Image (tube, rainbow, N blue to C red; front, side, top):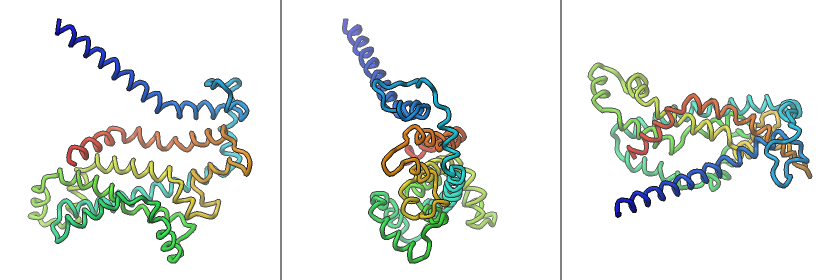
Length: 280
């Protein structure tokens, strides 16, 4: 009798668990489905009650207007330049710093690393004004290069790559030094190839953050020809009106590179997060 009770209780727990998971998935997917549905509507259909998930008629013209009414291709190019070069710079610089913190010995290493981690607890909004003042004095306002340079270092990136480097045996580095290899050769030819999963994870995190960034371009960019996609989407909002259907169509177009990057790096991202969590 007790065995039947245990089986029944386990079944009830499993049912409750799956119901909870399904509700969470629905809660996560609902905004995306609404965005897709809205992108195919006319503005007069957007806020109908109840929600019309499959609009009648379907307005595919929104996806054409996105590219015609604003220089969306230019915004795409600007965002790609900032995201690609900013990501490459951050991955390289964070890997260099992580190598030093994980493999080299120098006075105050742990203290300095602790200070780096402490910066993760400081909201960026508290330092954006001093950063703006500094960039203004350096004559770096209204330049895409400013957005790239500001992404050179990340405390999270250094932490993530350090976890990977710590999992690489020190014997490899010592054997290379015996053969006459310098630190630069060891870093490029031995350490980096062993941390491809970590680099992939950091690449996707950084790229997504750069691509979706709205605040930094809003603060530092003034010329419309230098706008990124996130600022370009704001052009669909007038002084008194908001073209929701057009904005949703533009947002979906802006998400395409994110999907592509994730599809290419999905396996490495999963491995990277799992490995960093275990090492942490």
